[in-house]
Length: 79
Image 1 (spheres, one colour):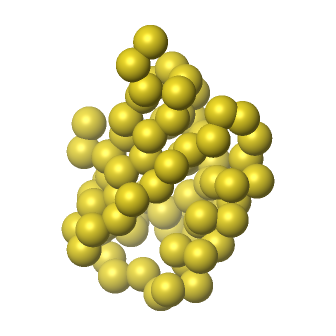
Image 2 (image 1 turned 180 degrees about the horizontal axis):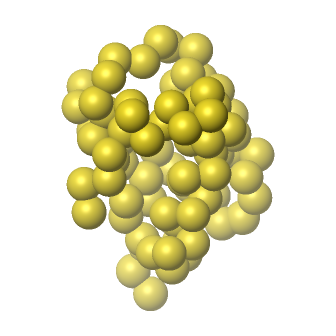
Image 3 (image 1 turned 120 degrees about the horizontal axis):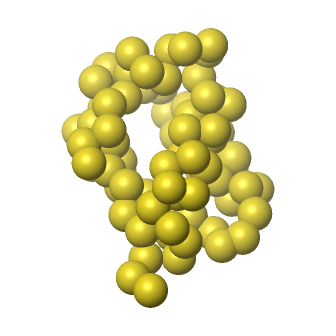
């Protein structure tokens, strides 16, 4: 099975602490691990799991590091 890939657009600039917290939450999120790469406008998540599971785990991580509902105003799925 090919790894699942999920891309999210960054709609608003985020503080460096958010990125560190997101990496920590993803690392503590269990197996299989999710890798995250970030450009100025996009975050790409990759994991050896199904597409739906990757999207759910990413959404959960974003909800954990952002204020209630804020992640939906700051980020938008590209795919």
